[in-house]
Length: 241
Image (cartoon, rainbow, N blue to C red):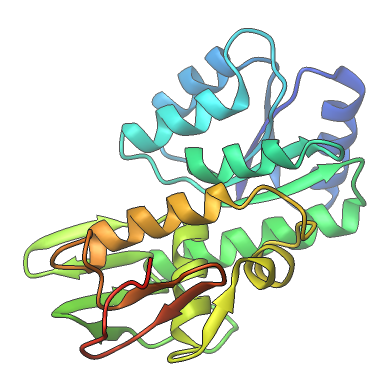
């Protein structure tokens, strides 16, 4: 059985999520604060995914997901955010959340997002999946494996969050073309185009550390000043920033 941990302090919402997820065949555990969630996740590895509210008593949802990633725990995390706070989305991405959903949300959308995260988990375990596999690619002596969410350089393996992998794949699929920050916000992340773009820049900085020989002089994840970014598979000209 697939076990989901719901971390939500609003009792009516936690009960509603539990009822509907169990109706879909999931086993659901509930934690009403961040500390309890971390304790639950530390006791075993049977949780397939976490539905995590941002606003919690005690430590926040941001702190929960950041703590998990710092410990090397990459259980998929779907973060619930306030509709009026796009900065919550950006902070969640930076902390290591895999996806987000603004409140109030439609149950069908939450279930679809959750199924998407669980498919990625199946791929990373080598379990059967209904979708066609995404082949790894080689860039600068590194292997980027989008299914296993890994970047391998020799014996060194770097785990990617779903959001890191999705941004990198988004750029790779548009190789040689300039991708604006607006397109990343609206087409990839589903945010308003006037949302603060600093999170994108922070993601690029992290991806350059993984991919570039000299991150301060990038040849593959190139900045196009005032516009956005461009992926160059071979020897690029470097950043224009």
